[in-house]
Image (cartoon, rainbow over the protein chains, first blue to last red):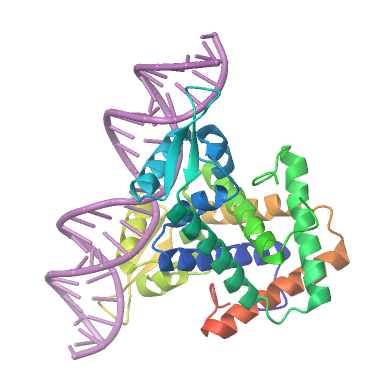
Length: 149
Length: 149
DNA sequence: TATTGTTATACTCTATAACTATA
DNA sequence: TATAGTTATAGAGTATAACAATA
């Protein structure tokens, strides 16, 4: 199963592996993957609903429900936008911030464990390939696949 | 956003990118991602429910519902197992096989487009890195993350 | 007894369409 | 008119617990 693999199939398999690792991490924290992903999007500061729906590739109405459930659990708060009275910004609570950081940190550890036998030069090559793929997508769609940072 | 990226974050981003590509492909085929993934698992032949739930990381009861919906759409059939009267095997119909191959093929094309500017040697390095990651996971868990082929 | 698969139940997640309030 | 966000509704996805039938 190792060497005759097509590169596109390899990417799909890698994706499923990371998806399952993420699902495991979320289960340990008693979060759904969608909830954890939402929390991670808010780590760097509050974000409005429209922007969040773009980041998460969700319809606004779907996002309303997701935010409702996470807010009900006390992990985020809706705060009014000072410049637009229609809008609100979604902000992590202290508990939510801890969980968001915990999930991000746990993902780092779990993936790091999978990378354990890749040494320095191989890592640099891998990260540069992945960066080029991400950049290619950004160029093709005109926007980054994730937060612009 | 390109060079200071941690390798684990890069993998997470790549994963989300592939997830979104897969979601797009599925929407074009009027399938949910879960349904398409199920069809892809059956391309090489019928599989029983217990084995499928292991491959998809789903509880058996969740799988029952998923198979119900896909069967209702005429994409798979439950066929009795000759050697165990409790068991059944899930088999693609002709329509289901076409859709499964279409989704697999479309993923290959879409990902190939993202890889367009990676030349031969870089591809070989990428595929070997990814293979090592997948192998590390198999070694750690004692079973492949996906079908054993 | 153990295993295969289903049913019952209760959530979460998601999209479409229609809506309110503000810009 | 256009935009920010919500509500209503319907369906898909998922897990837990209890179950039936067969091994």
